Length: 158
Image (cartoon, rainbow, N blue to C red; front, side, top):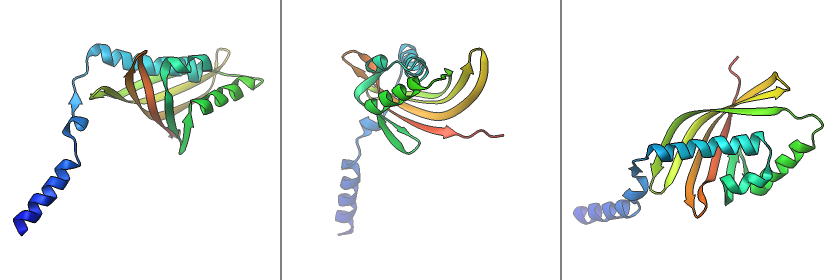
């Protein structure tokens, strides 16, 4: 009976895991550059440039970001952009990424990075912020795109 129970539990455990899903695949230098360019381009054009026409260049149609405990989809991001563009005074946002890991799992690329944003009024720095973020990029018929992201604000450590 003990052997039967051991075998049954082992079969249940091993049937619930798929070793291929957890396997890290060797990522090429070209794929790392694609991932970095995807992140930097999304932040330069979308969050910095507030250009909603570029969302389809960087996000899948079903993209979402987990932003400080809220779920944002492409429509909510477009609304955010409209609100920012409607402000009387806009600052210029410049993003700087510090990549922690870029790994490939199966056909997906997982990217973890620190995102530092600098806000300028003309040439004057008027603010800065930092987020710890991750993103999942997937291949599509139109090239690599971001499927989802997670963003956590990092408070100033003064």
